[in-house]
Length: 481
Image 1 (tube, rainbow, N blue to C red):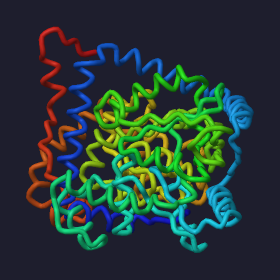
Image 2 (cartoon, one colour):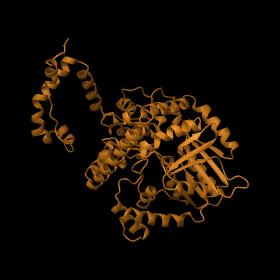
Image 3 (tube, rainbow, N blue to C red):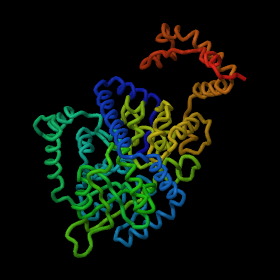
Image 4 (cartoon, rainbow, N blue to C red):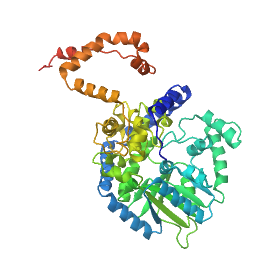
């Protein structure tokens, strides 16, 4: 699942998305709704939100500090509970484990609950090449699978489509009458999925939290398809990134209290599934077999780094996407990666190689909002700045694919010049004064200037106040040294 994406690839797709007025309207509306729901909920119900964030941060950092021990503890307890635990070093390993389980049991059709890990390993495509059909059961995933797209968001995969567009998709792909009312659209999807669930043998799910001292997994969802996928089948397979480990139910509860408000602005989701193993003797329901695949896929390399390991604290709430001023303009597909938004900018080059995804580090305005809203306090802006240094060969050279990453000499020289100017007060004030003088000319002639014309294609020339320091100097109480 590794693809090399050039600067040209990114420029082309970003240009397409910026010119898609419907996409931008849909994204703006959806992001505004999610942001305001979160803001209102925190104000009304979470007066101690910052303390909760600290508790969540500590719970994740505790596990990451001894992840190998917690993984081992989880495996021992999960095995006692009747799970079969598999280890997958690579995406291919994970796919082969699932394929072999299906092949040995004569399964030709798999039903999936929502799982970004399955997107990361390219499960659907792999199974298709092997002659096995993988069907999505999450409503958003179903919509995008019908039109052969990938998730645009890690929590709400079809949020770029409005209800009228969804109605047309259902009409064209499912033969349903054209509808646009949410209740009727849900009814169409429910009827379709009920048919898929009849007689299925194998279900795939992700994992929100893997509880080490219980050997159990915790899934959160809103539609009930996750419960159907994990309990109504004969064989349940859960794909779990090793960073999903937590020590206890208490720690998982803390993180769950951070996850739901951050993701969609609710206190709790409709379904909370805690799975402790396969069907036991005398029980009437549940899968006969339950498997857990512990997926590494370069997570161990991330964990080994003194800075980037913090990204493994992510609980996949997606709030950094919702608050990102870049994401809400271009959407997730423009990142050309499984994980979009600020967290995607940080982890994608490390999972799939900086040489394949170098340009993704540019998709950030460095406004810092993602770091302010992250429920587990991942320093995303700082990590993105580090990745930009790696991209221009000015960093520590620790990210996978660093040596093979092509970088622009012009960008490198530009950054060096900026660093020199920005760290010298006299130079900075001189440049700002010149900018204030010549900025009006940029407004007049920028569209005819080679470098500026690209920048101004989607922006307006800002008004530069080159004498700001002089104004501050004359404020009462300010002493210039």
